[in-house]
Image 1 (cartoon, rainbow, N blue to C red):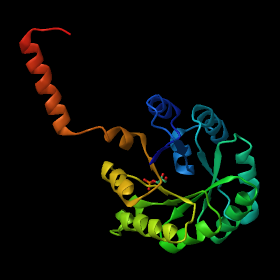
Image 2 (image 1 turned 45 degrees about the horizontal axis):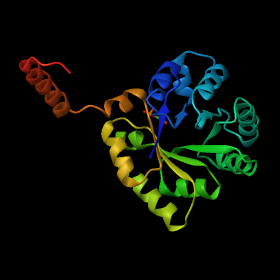
Image 3 (image 1 turned 180 degrees about the vertical axis):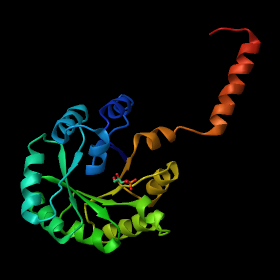
Image 4 (image 1 turned 180 degrees about the horizontal axis):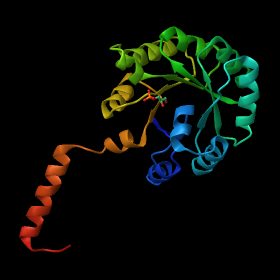
Length: 216
Ligand code: G3P
């Protein structure tokens, strides 16, 4: 499973990248706002930090606008994945970009039928939003399972990118459900290491070792 980091915080990306944990990065307009930085500048910096795909999102909602913006984004670096929304115009833009050999991440996916359309449009990635479905008491993880089954039934090559990840359980459940990629906020990625029994076990080992009076 690939790990993408869902952030526009370059320092956080750098730290996780040093551990070999960053297979790619996803950004969106809200994350750019949170960074407080210039969109193109921060995306360019991220693209130079990581080898994998870096998703940068268009903000136009019509086809022509998405094409114009997507082309500008693609000029930033060869590892840009153009992020388009799961709308009719977004699917059309996806088809155009894919035909030109550009990587496309179709975002804001909330149903299996939407994912099916994105695969038909040749998306590189489909981004189902787990957390936002769970927020409505719907089953985000069931959506990942459904998309996995549909894509496998027809050998679609679109990669399932589990997004809107809010917890460590979302990560392991996405892996079990067969997502190809999970994109996590840095804090969630860091939380994967935590287990109280690891902390307790380590504290016991340190204490017992000190009692031996030995040194390595
Ligand atoms: O990758 C999409 C993600 O950033 C959305 O997450 O937590 O805003 O639903 P969230």
